[in-house]
Length: 95
Image 1 (cartoon, rainbow, N blue to C red):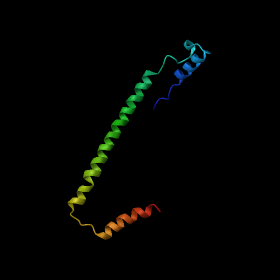
Image 2 (spheres, helix red, strand yellow):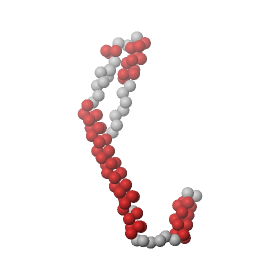
Image 3 (cartoon, helix red, strand yellow):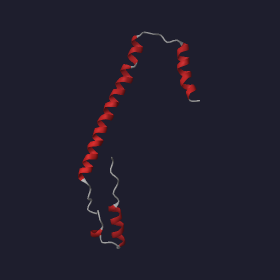
Image 4 (tube, rainbow, N blue to C red):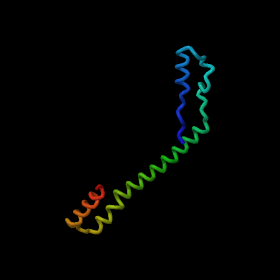
């Protein structure tokens, strides 16, 4: 899970600039982030990135090599009627 942003620094700066609050008394102004949670988030994001890269490589090979090869290897000559149907069917699906 991605961590929520921390606005304590902005709140501290505006309070200090206006002179209403002592910067030492603002809780969380020392950037007290939970290091373990942050490392877990980074590890999770790295894992998901690897999965996304794998899917991208698989889809690229499948769409650029595996799918066209049988069409090329069959030496089939597509007719004009086939192409008319191949263009008409997806066009009708938008209606």
